[in-house]
Length: 339
Image (cartoon, rainbow, N blue to C red):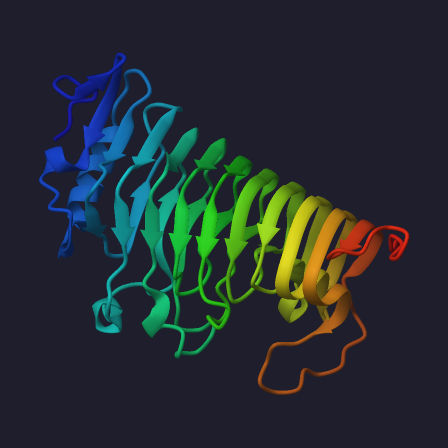
């Protein structure tokens, strides 16, 4: 259906562009534009020449239902330019015959840039009264997407996690904004799991759960220059659920401002877990109205029932907490805690 040499597409500076309006998107916020987005992505991903772009234009709001944008693509340098707004369905009934665990997923795309100055609205209000983790979907998810850049995008009102990096390497997330009410349950800003060489920087995150959470099986995660609040702080974990064996190494968090959060720097593991979490650092952290500045919890349990006591635990080692400051206190009043 789509010509792989990209003949007839709009070009900017010699690069092929695929505007969803050219595929008959409506963009009124009410009409279902899902198939149009899938068609525009198929054309973008199938283009062999240059660095193809899928354009989501400004001053339009596009209703998109649960969708997978599949790779691999013909080019190893493709982009999605978010200049308009994407919204999720506004009623829960819309999800009845669909996979409610995710909303927008990019799968097996190498060299993807997802950038723009506009908004992804998960319309999570109706989900928040439901079971915290079992009924809600993740927002934007990158699965097996190596060499990915996410830049400039704003996320609001996610039903659950707003941005998920999963099974992906060499990922750079920069200048994103995430906003959900402090009362919205389990709305992590950014979640990273089973991934490596991930850099998250220069972002502002305020949610009802962790600003950033790090899951099992990750290596070399750098988080820096973040404003976090409200929320639950920045967490490594929870790790080792249901006796799983994990490997978490080289997690480095620095230059973070946390305000109005329940926690600051947190490491949490389940009883019965196996494996290790090592070489973890939290440095240059400023705390304002943070209830629990530092937590290491190896008895984590979020079940409504009491968790059974178990002898096994994820082994935690080589952890540093340094250069913490507290609101307007200077270092002469509050010395740096170190472990």
